[in-house]
Length: 499
Image (cartoon, rainbow, N blue to C red):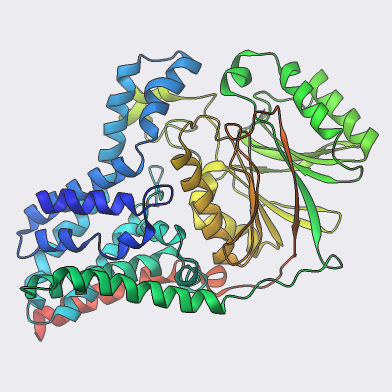
């Protein structure tokens, strides 16, 4: 079990905001050493423990959120309950790995004499497990193995345009499994094996990175959006009257050039402002300065939505984007009869999931907006791109997170979405990180967070090149899941009948 724990720690340290992304190419070697010749039940247990530990270490920043930040702001549960919830969250996230461990333990004996085939088998079913992690109301994709490549491996990350995160997961597991075989069968020079392997990966990444083009930049073709990072704390959002927030937003909007399109964060206001004085004053500013303002706030009509929509001189638009991927337990309660006891985790209200990939056509812009948790899932940005978005906006409320690791992990998801769809992605957060990312995953411009700059707000002028290209991944989505599933089943049949 020591090897399992070492592997879990190395995997976590490879994630964005942690230590070093290249660790991911060797992090699974101890796991596969521990999984050699195990029974199905032991395999399931070891894979579960590995997933549980690595995911909790990856998400360590959630512990202070659950034990300090949320209880202090919402006053809805005692601090120690946050610890319980944190570990229960780890259990839920790690359950899919039970499936991988069980299947691996059942069939690995078929391939004992065929290390490459066994590596393909392991990679295929691990990839299937990763897909299982994203489906259903408890789906959660943060901390995927592929995320580690967004931590300094821009070249290899370009494969996202072909098969999305699942292709990268497959490659990572295949390489680790092959290396584990070599590691076990070498009696010396194991350290050299590891160093050389990582060096080869680094050289491959550098070679691909050198071929990655820089988008043609010309003021003739560039479009401009303004991001308004409000730097408003969660205490102010929840307990101060909306006039306090409006005062900050109003001052900032008056600094933005007239006639501009402005993007504000998710939940800039915590109530529906369309028919009150806050909304009226916001409309007046838009009229005075000819601004088009995309702003987030909840709405309560036939449905409850966490949404964003434009306010202009004509008022609030009828068109809106409602968040599709709701945060479990915070914005929605999965299977109330089972998880009803966790209803105290609700932040504001339970929302209904949006169903449309809305595109906002404003001036020359075709903006596909997604909200916070949406960016963890490829399907949202992909749906927006297929609907005609030539730039993607991630409006988010990351003010709950005091630790920079959380912010970097969230930003890495916008990087992945940019590469997958070859679109500029603009992330606008209430306290940071706000940034613009080019279609190849480069951070072109980043605004200082509220901790890095003591200011009421930060304004970012972001230029981007509208794109209409469609990648293989945009067209076909998670096709690599089906490839992995069929490959795994074919190998099981081959192993049972022929080998």
